[in-house]
Length: 173
Figure: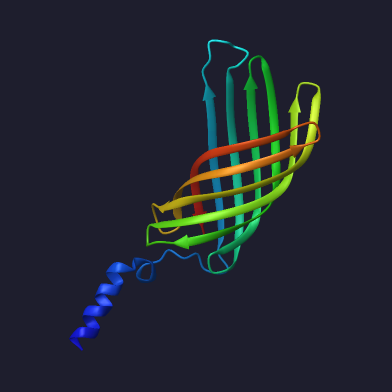
């Protein structure tokens, strides 16, 4: 009996995922708001680029740890004296990988529509994005989120490849 108890305690210490996992159960909703920025300093004003984005994600967990939903993103880009705006939205899927009661990792993939406006030029097209990140739960249903995401935007006149560092908050209910 002592051996069984010792082995069980050792297993709990070595594998905290099974003991105190932060799984997101079927039927839960998750809403996430994030932001990202890119500030580029240059002595040449024509090369200076400032980028600000607001991102919103919402998903419904169809099974434990697998959510399907949608994303929406607004980006303002200033390059030299030009000002551009990009809107993106579409469906996405997210998979949550619990580590312990406070920490979980996730990956998501999405496709969608992108619209880009710069002065008199308007362009639209298709986008694909894939990312991975970490959630640190501050409370039972509120988490800080950090994510790295690759995004490919195929517009009618050009293509954009981006790698974004994203930070924000997530609420699960």
